[in-house]
Length: 402
Ligand SMILES: Cc1cc2nc3c(=O)[nH]c(=O)nc-3n(C[C@H](O)[C@H](O)[C@H](O)COP(=O)(O)OP(=O)(O)OC[C@H]3O[C@@H](n4cnc5c(N)ncnc54)[C@H](O)[C@@H]3O)c2cc1C
Image (cartoon, rainbow, N blue to C red; front, side):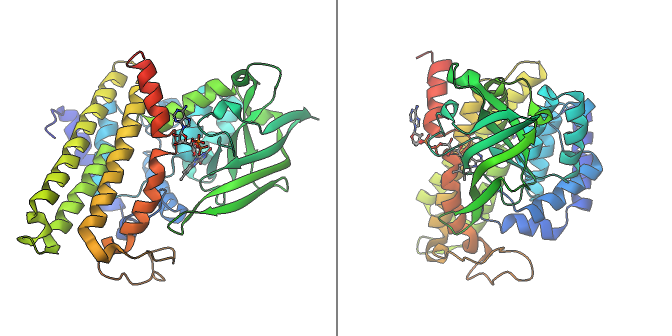
């Protein structure tokens, strides 16, 4: 894309490129490439997290006074773009993009001093306790309860689809503290340590055989009152703030475009009965071009949102648009990859991880080894963080006024 970067932005881009060239080791790039899960595994993600933290670049979305980078929106875009081009692993959003900004915005000075440094350093790994069996899209109907006893909240109930709960030291959870008021008004936002007898984590295996999500059971789990963020009953306001961060303000297009470039390179080398290689198959090329155009259009939308943010405007319902488009484009890329690789993609290795010394040898290419598992895992992208249908409802109401 043709960007009119200022001389300062171009200098910043050089700084990022040189940092990536010096500090991003091949084993992290290869680990990211060979991870078919939705979320990068903590060993890969946290190593990169620590490298970024040493550089002071791990929390671009935080206020500068709390440990953020102070970058302009354009600089954030440049950083994301260069990381995508260099094949850097994604890092866990749970602490940095979800609970971190909540603590920055709603936490007391004591809470900020206690929790933020350990999110930045990577010492604490977090998980998100929002969804429950029976309360996903209709989140406000959640039932996990909390009552106060002797200066502590006592929590009972269950959360489900909890990503990386089996790795987490802490969970941030929405709990019901009042059943007498409107359902949204009875919700409170709590932080609970995971290492306690009242919390049990059981795995849920995905279709591809990956263990990323869990069910979490609370049986008289405890957390001190000081671990409540905001006031009692303010949980719904905080939940919405967090969901807007989860759905938007990100740059998804650079990674999608990088994945599309990789597909293009595979198509050049993939033999086909039509003119020698899949890259010369007109119908395949048309579909690849269409998905590339969609990703480029998404990139322009993301840049427009960044420009709005720079002017102090809030992105609002555009975040729903970006969330929906990016996950749909991603799923199309995954489907094209399967078609491109043909029968080589019909493999579903169950050993994990697929990187490192113990990894099984790929049958066929490295891309073929992960293509099917990636496709299956990313079916979830149009469900988590608010399903497509829910995003369409938001767009219909807030953008189209229906
Ligand atoms: C891989 C993965 C990771 C996840 N990680 C986490 C996590 O870490 N923490 C967490 O709290 N949650 C997590 N989730 C849960 C996720 O947020 C929920 O799955 C999602 O909100 C949908 O809720 P549900 O599964 O209960 O489906 P439901 O809400 O029961 O929806 C079922 C179907 O009905 C449709 N539907 C529902 N309401 C409407 C409506 N009003 N109009 C039209 N259609 C509607 C939905 O689009 C969907 O197709 C994760 C989910 C997945 C798949």
